[in-house]
Length: 210
Length: 110
Image (cartoon, rainbow over all chains, first blue to last red):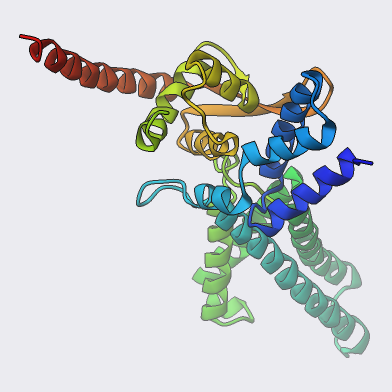
């Protein structure tokens, strides 16, 4: 007995395995497959035969992958799959870095508040470290949202990147007030700027986020 | 059957010209091309989508997700201003090529 949904799921997995990794593209191709099948079935075709013919008409993943891989032109935009992979890399970097910073923040919080003899005002400490932790949570949540393709992910990471730029740019001009080295601050600023450029609005059309 | 190179070269101007008539989606575009060419222009269906995505990236067309009659999601494309300009340029070039060929054909019967 031909199971249409099962067949389409397997077809989708084959396309993914063949290199078409961007979910919106897969959705679009699947939509085409269903319409093509539907028309054939209405014309009297057997469902299994309609599925096979529709799949053949769409073409093999390998062939399509090459076409999706390059936008054309020497400096033309990145191909879909490469853009998707870079997006994932950026999202994972944000999650990883933010998580690392957050755990450091919590350690410092613990040290300064519970261990340090000269405790700063509890309120001030909690406020400052709370702001930092909020930013880092934003980075983690934003990165996860970006990985899952939610639009909020882009906005959250951009907000966090802008918020991070403020103290870091300040630190560049007053290095002595900042515990980190100039190299670290510059790397941080650079990373924030690259993130903002990469996630800028207008790239939305071609950056398939998942 | 039309030569591969000609099919490839005509894909972009055809898509732009079809979208100039109104918003459409991938499957409908392919069916229209097949119908209008009497089956002579047979694109591998899937190959239309890279073309559409490239046109979208270049800012010539824009896309939105909508619903089909059956309620399934479907991606609709429409022509942008830059797309209209690109279409005019294509039109100019194809007309020119056709004019030269037609002229040569006319001369060969003299």
